[in-house]
Amino acid sequence: MHFNWKVILRVIGILLIMNACFMLLCIPFTLIEHEGDIVAITLSAGITGITGAILFWLTKEDARKELMKRDGYLIVTLGWLILTLFGTLPYLLSGAIPDPSNAFFESMSGFTATGATILEDIESVHKGILFWRSLTQWIGGLGMIVLAVAILPLLGIGGMQLFVAEAPGISPDKLQPRIKETAKRLWYIYIGLTGLQVLITWAFGMSFYDAINHALTTMSSAGFSTKNASLGAFSPTIQYIVIVFMLLAGTNFTMIYLGLHGQFNKVLKNEEFRYYLGIVFFVSLIIGFSIHSLGHGTLEKSMRDAFFQVISILTTTGYSTWDYTAWGSFITIAFLLLMFHGASTGSTSGGVKLVRHVLLIRNGWLELKRQIHPSAILPVRYNGKAVSQDIIYNVLAFIMIYISIFAVGSVFVAASGVDFVTALGATAACLGNVGPGIGEVGPSSTFVNLPDISKWFLSFLMLIGRLELFTFLVLFTPSFWRKN
Image (cartoon, rainbow, N blue to C red; front, side, top):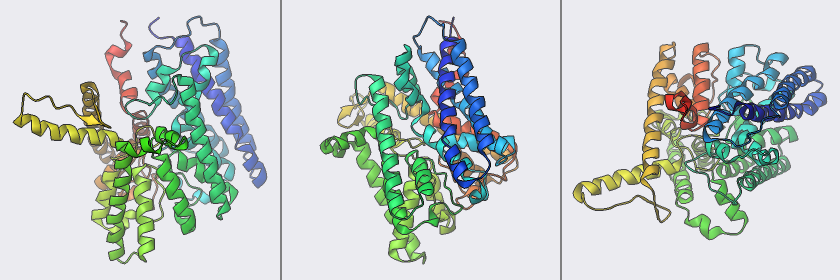
């Protein structure tokens, strides 16, 4: 058999069972608030869990446990689609989002950690459903697939192929020799930082409910909020705290791991980390002084809003404290460009990722030198090491395909009846998993008024962006389905 369908379906069954367990975590908030969504949430969890259990049971006799690389690509893409479909159940059954197109868009935005929303009055939605909304982003942030990798060896199924297919960036750094241990350590860091943010924001005035929701959506670089005004509804102190945690979420988790183990020298020598901090401070200071000169407020407020918005968009978190499209065309364009940037590889952020931009620029600079010295061997160097030509080709192909998808996607969305500026903003925001865009889908607006065909198209752009293009697009190549 070309694909090991029994193992593929077995893994998807495991993911659905895990998803059902996460749904049940919403019940306490429903009971506390006496909101009456317990039937909808329990039924959603039951349908999801039973479906997963059936898939798991029917495939338990498979003898060949090894996952091939193609199986990994198929599991990741199918897994995300199926989790998104079942993730719509709490919205539909509770009546919070009765329209299937809107429910699918919201669910895909959650699981891909995008943060684009169709909800116009978030605060009117029941707390149990809002918690599920936040939880989908936390699940999708680092990747439910990585969580599954940690337990697959217990079932006799190898997990390396899944981690390679799902992990953000060019190539995931192994924190430990065994992939199972790597996945565990990633989740320890992820869970630990989430819990730490809950405690700190709670201690500084957030309600426990708001604290846990925002911690879930900050560490996943996702951006769903429980407030219509997003983080603008909270105090400056809370905003500063969230700035720090957004910055951490956009940092390569390997650097966080090394920092926790006192290896600060390695962290400071890492080129990507230095570029990341440099861009944050450079762009934020420019925008901060610019909006201060426009009379945005005190210098402190201007700098706070500038740093918050720059970090939010750069890390593709998508929170807002202010509508940056109201700061003029120059700043609006600057934020549109930031949507194509992304933060560190190996973080929960979306986008192109910083390392690809650096390698692209360095390769371009060396091409100029090669024109003068055609016989010279001039390898691209990164972190003091020569980068293989295969990786350079991968980066060039990725950026070319990314820009092509953005261009075609913008035209498609515009053709559906959306004005061109909004089409550009919506496409960039969804492909980069940013959340808010520009035009009619800016920070103070939602995606609800877009045509249904645009919502479905943008939903799949979110998936393509979340899986870093190749994992999804490889499924559409004839060679992928051809027997070797």
